[in-house]
Length: 141
Image (cartoon, rainbow, N blue to C red; front, side, top):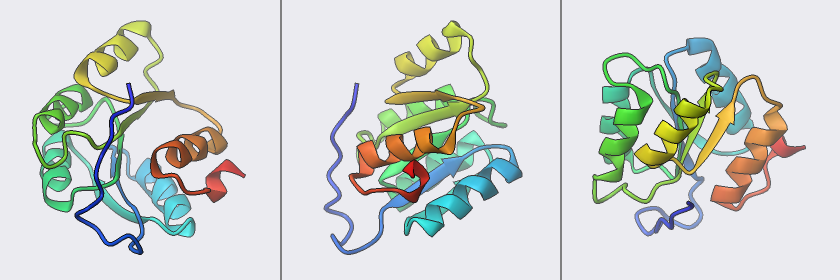
């Protein structure tokens, strides 16, 4: 279900931009810390509406999406992003504690590329980031 995304909007030397969309500040801090240590630029959103706005304005290279976001859940935010021409192909990885199969199905139908269930080893996240951004990640070590 991977989609291609042209990074022509960003210099090839510029670090990849990752948008973290999660309502939990501690989760955002953990992901931000690890991603910045790996050389990525990180932007954050605490709710679904902010996620869509930031995705459209910042045009990230990858989105880490929570499910239970205030104001607009991760499914609706993903659907909205998938219809925005300038970011419709950005890889979206759901990172959530919802392990029920119905959530996985909903996420895939909304347009997500990967679905990671918390808790997980940060190496798993590192491998997913490497898969979509093509850069070795300290998270994978």
